[in-house]
Image (cartoon, rainbow, N blue to C red; front, side, top):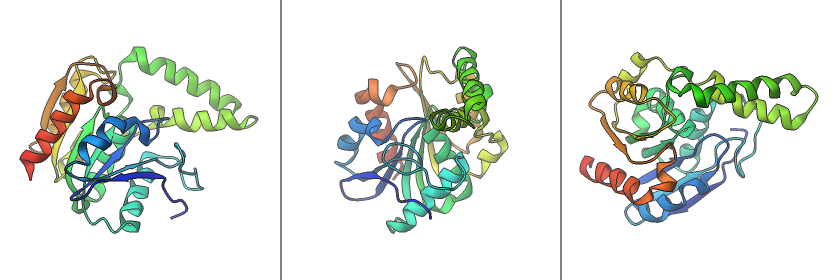
Length: 228
């Protein structure tokens, strides 16, 4: 692998890997790292090109990030882990669970989406405009190129067909805010397409893990501890 991930590690027991959203880093999960490490061995990682993890030379795509995660697990001798992904991190976890089903214990998808149709248009349209502007100047300006790459994840990815979700073997919790930027019917579609998935909405917007951590953590821990 052409990169080594920056990560925060805490706790002992069954591994839980936390995957942050677009343009963020592992500090997003500050309220989860401490809470979950009381029961699990927590790894919160910075995705390729995010936070303190280098960009490297490989493609900047959700599927590459999923392959990076496999490399991270191999490097740290993690045969199997619970995965919790938020937003683009949820998309990474979703793709990983499809591609490497034997490496996932339980799966928690928070604010994930299959495609851009799942995002409310009031959110998606400005992203698409910003992407077009950044892409226009990407050949002449390095910051515009990096911005275009980051926004491109939300314009061109992840393009997962609902039928692909049938290949997920892990027990799954699909969780979102009641006022999430992901359409409620889209979140329901994801849950309905994964065999025996649990669906839960809690108060709040897209950022429930950071803004409603007690309620979010309780929902996740209840799910994990009831599934083992």
